[in-house]
Image 1 (cartoon, rainbow, N blue to C red):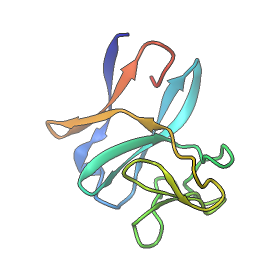
Image 2: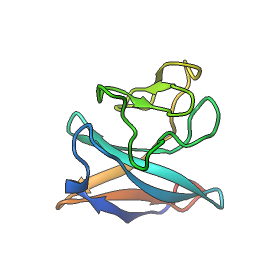
Image 3: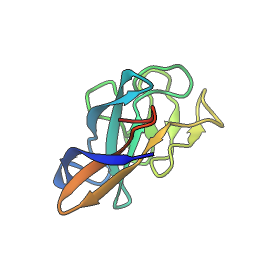
Image 4: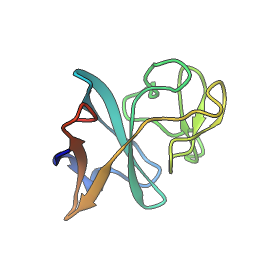
Length: 121
């Protein structure tokens, strides 16, 4: 499987515990919403889809963290996710989690790792 990269944003656009950056990925032939955030100094990216019901997490574009900036929160259902791995830690999705996407950060930019076998593109 060949892997390529696509630019998501400048690294400075992602402040630890701050707003996320939305983007789209092609997943099995469909464009799907996704987002990248920075937490504990590392960039993470996930499909923007609650594990409980497939709705986008952010109620205001790019706002994925709860008020304490500790958890990612679904604005519709109140489900809480660990920003480090996307695992659901509370709410109606308990035991499931967000679908992670592979990203890298180098030379001041954040890139999505794209796979050509029907995965995130």
